[in-house]
Image (cartoon, rainbow, N blue to C red; front, top):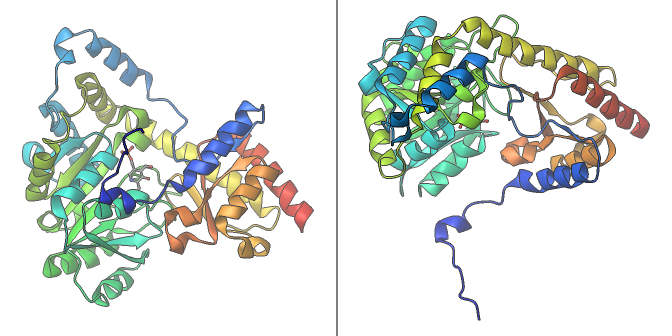
Length: 393
Ligand SMILES: Cc1ncc(COP(=O)(O)O)c(C=O)c1O
């Protein structure tokens, strides 16, 4: 008899990846020759810039670049991230103490949960949630409490006040995945003093900081005076610079929290490959217009999708940021449940979307469409979706 493989108890608490089944279905259909339009995962479809690719090729030729790199980020990279914050947000950061490089922000976020949270601790995660904000806490052995996502500071504080136990930390994420909720600086100006007074660590996931539309600019939590006493912010090269597969991100802010993250990471990894770190410097120092052009592409895609679906009476409010369209399912389908609706759209319209239920119970009744197909394919998807919605009505 083969020996039995027994997973840790921790694994029993983790759900099976809800999007896995739909992705497998997409793959199966593509292999059968169907042209499935993929609005599923938020995986940018555009490449990194030529100068970033060429810099990588240059550095990779240097034999010395093949050794383990500096795990927390090479000094020039940390300085480039700090300089970026000074230029864009007028925030002063000490590169060696208040900035750390991470292997994408997902790695940093989940290891930070391990460094800050454990049994007996409570962490607040607004719902619907980006799965890491929920499950990294569970893996750390702490408890999560879900509060409703909001752009209203008083409402957020009200939700925290109602809790029986004060949370030790809170995940924030504006522009928010999946809902596209955005805030202005006043939101942070009201919430940061509350976090400081109540000793609640604010972990702001700023993944979509540059993907903003209609003239809106997303604020950094670190712009608020005193935020560094209680907050850190994560940003990533994945979306703004189309470097998702390169795995490069940063955590910035409170020096003690950065130090804790650096300590725990030293047990797990040796940091990023040096050529990637140098490439990231090139990207950060590059022409900001390139980043604006990326955002403009997502904005155009949002408009094509939302305006197109409106033609069949599916009215969706336009988000000011993020790379997703998040919407309630059309009224006639609400009884169906988001998973079944996504399966139906895949069957009938050959379009893959993410069911809202994958982002927690509060996401039920909604779907998320990632803007990772070009405008021509989005127009095609709109025709296919509108056709099946009309034929059913
Ligand atoms: C809110 C949010 N945070 C973090 C990430 C992960 O980004 P990274 O590629 O830096 O790990 C994503 C990716 O989709 C995201 O949507």
